Image (cartoon, rainbow, N blue to C red; front, side, top):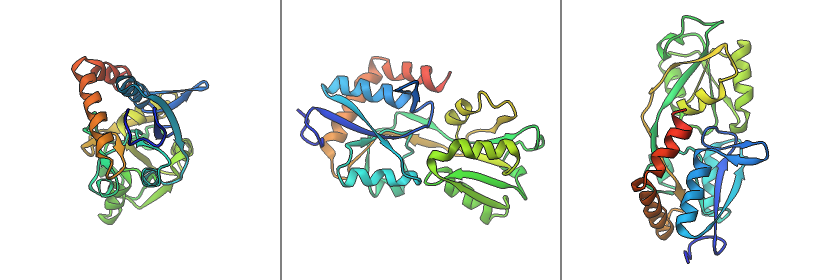
Length: 236
């Protein structure tokens, strides 16, 4: 039995929904890459998987739940950054991704990269790893302003892009490809703006849990389960 979980026999996993294809609600049931991955890891460890839905406006607030014991780990398309490593321990990365730029090709057909955003407003979510990129672009004069949206207001952000209230949106490419499927005016015009490694986070000093998750994840990788999940959710 793993002793470093908040409830014996249960792994409580925090995710910020919706963030497809990593996690979202399909009908009444949670689904997505992180959901399938953590269920598989729990099966390896003989634990029951339990979802804790994070509802804060700033994504970085999710890590406080590790410190106060609200949940055991975070699996939410989470980029490993030095700032986050100061407050949480990360398991080995399970996938690499990067920021993408989404524009309204009907209203701004000449925008093909961040170099074409001068004079425009760029939308990002609070606490997302797109935020420091966007702020740097503003400091460099490459965008007129950065508009911040609560993490759960991603649909509002895309609505504003459709209506022309903002000029572009930046977020991880798999999420953007998923969310604009039924928004024909919106298109991913640039990918790999950043190179980011994503992984599961546990409490800062919970080495026991980090190691067992790493071991379970490695067994899934060796059996081809991880590559199967990647093809299913991130390369669809």
